[in-house]
Each structure stands twice: as structure tokens, then as C-alpha cells.
Image 1 (tube, rainbow, N blue to C red):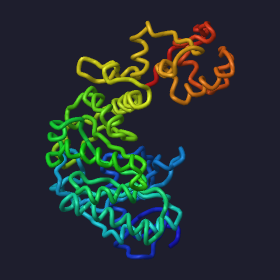
Image 2: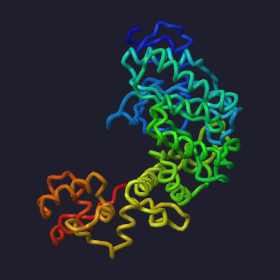
Image 3: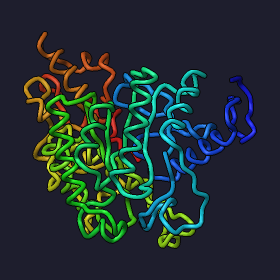
Image 4: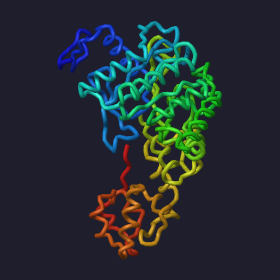
Length: 390
């Protein structure tokens, strides 16, 4: 194996084992990119590689081997590039082939972990069994102990899902839409309540420490089913608090030629950003869905982030005296996150905090200043304006 350009046009490395294998790896890597993203990804010239922030990344991006086991699909999700019946090349890998390709990329220093997913080839359980078989080869035959993410197939049997939780560092299953009718509209074969049941089962296994997996996630497609932001927001407490999900991912809909939604306009990426912000407020900041301002259509405001929108609508709550406020009150201040609040609590345990004490904390002081007092004093607002990030 050597650096260069192989016969299939995969830049960066030439593999001298079965050109057909690496042609399929490249094509299935491209097919994986056609799917909406289940992690925060950065683009890469290698079709089988993505740069992700995984569960064990230590706050850094790591290169992940991300290739579908197959893009042959019997499902008919209206937005999906790999949906059954769409005219596109179809490829599959056997578990041994996927594991061997990953090992070669790992040994070449191109990747550090793997994200295993697939279209549903025949039935969910058999597809899931092939994904698990791939993970078992990687873990046990090759002794790989690094990051492994397994996508769960909706409708798979409990036993194979439990085995996935035992093998993976993270598991995920896609909800796609915020309710039964919305999901049925865009993914007619998928069962919303069944997916929630899978999440509940995986959450129980993770809490009991039944395997390597420490977290589960899900993802949604924004704008494909005509849903409002309010529908997503009201689902968040169930996902985060009851089912214990680590994170919900949102992907703005993009039309794919040859699908039933090819003429639907692409969704505004700013909507995606606002939903992430609102999702974090519910997960980490103690906000309820009802508190977050929405417009007459039930969508978050686009021109201001949801936390600042709430603060501007509740002048009676401010200013907050940082020397006396409870942590929950400090978390309501625009510009203050959990880390900032932790810094403030640590600092005030040593004495009263004044404005000069805050300058060395590397916090968003310019944004927070209009909403706080320090030792009874406000900041000089002539040099501070409310910041409204896009």
C-alpha cells in the first residue's frame, strides 16, 4: 500500500488489493454522503472519510471511515438518494470486505474510527446482523479498540440491537420527523412508535452498562414533511430526559434529483442552526419548549437566537446579580453557558466578583453585559451593545 492515486480515482493512497473492492468502497462512501448527516462532519477529498466530533474524540475532530455496507434499499423515503426504485448505481460489501477495507485505511493512517451504516437491503434484522458481524470482525479478529459507531435499523429485533450496544461506542437511530403522521408522510415504511421503542430499549441497556456504548443519538430532516419547529421542540424533553439521548442532529432538507421531493425548495440552513440552539437550551439550560419564542407558524425566530429572544422578552428577569444568582438563573443570561457559569461559581467562592474579575475568564462579556450586575454595578453600556449572532 502506498500514497498516490489508485485506479478508481481515490486520492491519497493506492491499495494493491482487489481494485473492485476499493471501487465499491469509494462508491458506498459517496452514497453515505448522500444520506443526511448523523454527526457534525467536515468535507474530505477521500470519499470514504469524514471528520467527526465523536463520543471519544476528546474535543477534537478525528477522521472516520464512513461507508454504507450497502446502498441497495427496499425503503421508499421520499427525500433519500438511496431510496428503492431510484435510478442510481447500487453496490454492497460483505462484512469481511468492509472490515478488511477499514483495517487497510486504519493501517495507512487515514482514519482513526469507523461509522457503520447501511440501507435496508432485505429486512431490518438481517441488515442489522450484517452490520453487527462487521463490528465483531473489527473488534475481535482485528482487535480494534477505538471509536465505533453503529447505526440501528428501524424494525430490527431486540437481540441484534443489544449486541450492537455491546460492541459500539455510540449507537444511533434516525427518527427523521417529529411525529407519527409527519414520518408516515415522508417514510411510509417506518414506524415512529417502533423507533421510540428501540430508543427506550437502548437507553435502558446503556444505563445498565450492558456494553461499550455510552450514548445514543438521533437525527431529523428539516423541511421534508412540512413540520414546524414547535413540533420538534415539544419532542425534545422525551428524547433528552426520558430516553437519555446524548444529542439530536438536524439536517436541512436538500432536494435530490429522481426523488418525489426533487422540486421541493431546499430548507434554510439558518433554521437548522436555530433548532440546534433551541435543542441545547432544552437539554442543558433548563428551558421548556413553551418558553422559547416562535412565530405565528410555530417556527423559531430567524433574526435572533432563541436564548436572546427569550431574554429580550423577559426584562423583569434582568439584570441578574452574578454574586447572588442561582446557577439556573445564570444559565438564562445570554452569552453564559454551563462552563461560564461554573467559572463564575468558582470565582465567587473566593470573594465578591467585580467587573475587572470577569475580564480574565474568557467569557462572552460583551454579549452578557446588558443582562447582569457585578457587585451591584452595571457595565458601561456605551461600549457594549447587545450582540445578535446570525
